Length: 306
Image (cartoon, rainbow, N blue to C red; front, side):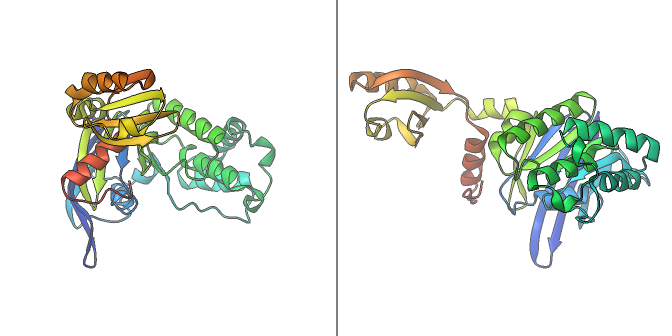
C-alpha cells in the first residue's frame, strides 16, 4: 500500500524551475531515499509533500487522499536548516513541540524522559539550548521530530554535523522507528549513507528524476563493471591498462571502472603477467555514487556536486 503518491509535480520560483514533472510512490513502511546534489530540488519536493508550498501542477496524495486537517500531526520533519529556541530549556522545547503535534502533556513528559535517556542527554533536560554543542542540539531536534510517533518521518540531511558515534546512534534510531512501522523519507546528497539505509531511491538532478526504483534492481540494471583491487606495486600499471576507464586510488587499494564487465579476467591476467602483487581482486556492483554520476553524465547534466 502506498503512503505517499506524487504525480507529475512541478514548481517554479520566478523563471527558475526547481522541480520538473516529478512522479514517484512511497510504500507504507519503506525507507525511501530522495537523493541528489545540493540544489537538485529535494527540499522543494519535501515542502510540497508536507503541504507547506503547493505545486504549480500535479498532485500529491497521502494514503490515497488529499492531506486532511490532522495531516501535520502525522508527519515528523527534520529540516536541513536546524532551528531551536535557544533561550528555552531542553525539556520545555521538546514539550512545546510535542504539544504542537497534538500530544497531551502527561504522555509528552514520559516520552521526553525516555528519549533524553536514549540520547544520553537526561542530565541536560533543564539546561538552555544555547548551552548545548551543535551535535547535542541536533539530537534534541531529532527528538522533537519523532516524539509524537509520526506515521511519516522526513529527514533532510540528518547526519550533517554529527560525529561518527552520534551518526551511528541516529542511524540505529531511524531503523528502530522504521521497524516499529514508521515510513521514512531520507534526503541527502551523500550517496554512501543512502546506499546502506534505503530500499528504494529517487535520484534527482536539476529538478528532474534521473533514476527511480528498487535499489537492488537499479544496481542489477547497471551491471557489474567495477573491480576493487588490493595490491602492492606500481598503481600506474592499473591506471594505464587498456581495460580500465577510470581508477580511484585509496593508497591501500584501488576502485577500477572497467570498459566492459567481460574485461574482468583480461585485466587480472594483464596485472599478474606484469608482476603486480595482488591480494584481492573482486568484481563489485556499481556504487550509488557511480550510478548517479553515470546517469547524469549520460543525459548531459552536471555530476560534480554529487
